[in-house]
Amino acid sequence: MIFQDNIMKKYLENVYFITGTPCGGKTTVSRALGKKYGIPVYDIDERFEEHQKASDAEHQPAMNKNFKDADEFFGRSVEEYKAWLLQNTREQLDFVLLDLIRLSQNGKIICDCHLRLEQAAIFTDPSRVAFMLKKPENLVDEYCNRADHQGFNNFIHSATDFEKAKETCNATLLSLNEKFYEDVKASEYFWLERDNARSVEETVALVAKHFGLREPSANRAEGKTKEGDLEPGKAFDEAFANGGLQIRKVERNTPLAEEFLHFVEQCSWTEVREHIAGLIRNWEFTDWETMFAAVEDGKIVGMTSLLKEDYYPMPEICPWVSCVFVEKDSRGKRISEKLIAAANEYAKGQGFEKTYIPTEFTGFYEKYGYTHVKDIVNYGGGTDRLYVKEL
Image (tube, rainbow, N blue to C red):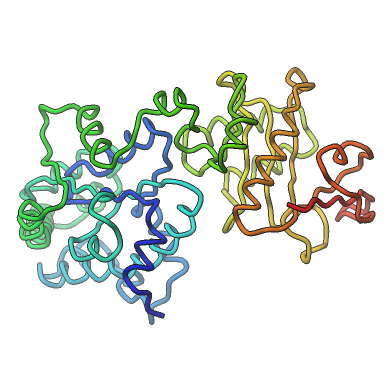
């Protein structure tokens, strides 16, 4: 299936691409920018194994090519090595684009990637891509010295002739990026040359200015939600972002996700906390599924989720508002109501017309607009009450 360029740009309009040459600072800037503005970072290198498992040798031959050792890997000619790298990146790009469309549908996301000029023209607007550059000469030593690249460092040093392997790798990266480096600098795209005299903070500020990102504190001062929070509109702002309380959508690989996992592991809901913690550790959420955290004065005090399935053999019912929980010391402040309302607002934004809640209680969810449908049997053999709400 072929998608027209305008369609791709529309569905990727929440994605900020940070790309460029090796050792140009893509990863450092992406992570610092994401941390400062509360935007999730999607690193395509970290997703390669996941994408490789979903690929096959017929359709993605480069991604599935195996090398018996470093001698075979670095023993190729520069042209062979270069062609394989380009094809490998192109094959993974299909997986990356589908991930980005899915992950960015409810908010901004930063993509740390390998995007060429011609691809940037197809997939995004110049205002949403930044090229981080370093002259592509003698890159192997610098690459190997990085803490997050020690796997590659060990691999290249396992070659029988390390110096020869290093020479081939350097020559390949130079051949692959030399013209690209010059073309970016001659283009109308935003780019920054790596400069050790410029701090990471200064570099992030320049990229943020190009992207039009605003300080989270400025957003809060204007009554807007912080980057990474839910943004369902004015009604949500008024109901859920005042009095020191925020309802935040938990995004994968973010500081909030780490804090949220710790909260779940330590919460007093002993019957289900390990199950929920397992979902978060393995991030077993697909499509629109997500969790929400109630944050009061900087501390997580409650949670809920929106899931395709719950603890019931009823696949025809969806979505479930589940895992509604507030710590004892924070109860009595209508936090459960705000969590459920946020989940419903999110579900409505996904196109759902109703949500379901299972419970053993009577008279609790009725005050939140839910109506009892029938009694249902869970996987454990117990009976619960099923409630539904029209959105």
